[in-house]
Length: 511
Image 1 (cartoon, rainbow, N blue to C red):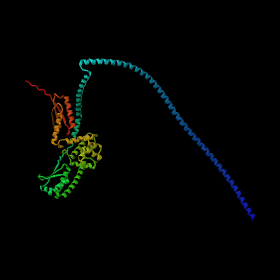
Image 2 (cartoon, one colour):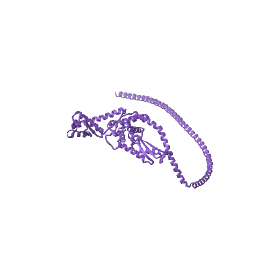
Image 3 (cartoon, rainbow, N blue to C red):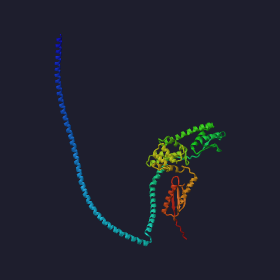
Image 4 (cartoon, rainbow, N blue to C red):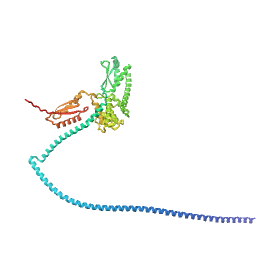
């Protein structure tokens, strides 16, 4: 039994060993086959890599040769340029040497000529000196004295010639420019016709009967005191039949007082509490009316995009006057004039109209700063984002600010047209007479003036001079100087014509 087990075990071991040998042989064969395949693949890869390396090498070699050829060609071109420059430089050097030789020859000739000129100059100086000595001996004057006399005579002659030349230029300018400017101004004035309402410092309130005066005064005057305190207007109740006078320099306050009185009289209830209530209500109504007037004015004139505060100030102009001329009517008239004149001159009429409407906006501010109204109006326009050309036109229409655009002189001229035409403004008689007297005295202060007459309401000044004291040329000069002095030192509407009259009379008697 044991022997059988041993034989079986030996047989199993022997079989396993044979199997191992067989598997080892098979594995060795596979291994050799795999090694051979790997070696063949490695050989193929090696050959491919070698081919790729050769191709890369050839490509790099070709590129390198191409770069070298390009560099060689550039070097060859540079060498050619250098050779050409060398040839040019050689030619220029030869030309310069030739010119140097020519210059040396010319210099030698010039030196010879300079010597001759110096000799001749010396001879001329000797001759001039001898001639001057002879002239001094003959005339009895030295050279400096003769020169000063000649300069003085030439100066007087040149001054006279210059004055006549200036007059010719002025006459020519008047012939060409005055005709066209008059046409534009006259057309502009003729196309605008507005009334100038004259405002006073008092308003007359009409009543039906004198019994209402007592009710307005109230017990011990309490009603009239309450009304004056609420409106800031002096109420004058006198013997004038069926009329009460409202006195104040502010037209807005007078209008508020008038409307409040009208409502109180119509309602019949007049006492301090009611007065305060009505005045507050009327103030609100007047403020609304001011805004409405401003809006209506801008719509009528076709002006858009104004700031609401500027619209309110435009409406406020209705209750302001300047030299007796209603400010809103004046501004509307200036706006229309500016638009017409700008159109005639080829400028934007809308911008000119806007500047014309706002040019006196500085006369109706809510506060009263210490500034000229033109400068204040310019600052208000800048504050509410108006264009620079409009701000400049507002600020410069009385020459407080330098003009920078063509709209500025248009506004200035149209303002003068609106204010200077007959009946537009009210002028106090005393100031009018004083202005005429100052004008006459100013012309009388010049030497040679005998009489002066301010005529045509101060639009013309006639100056009579002595014919033996002033010549015709001096009369032209005198007219120019008087006009310039009046323009610089006086304030007046429109323009003043200066006429200098020089008269010569020859009288004899036959006996």
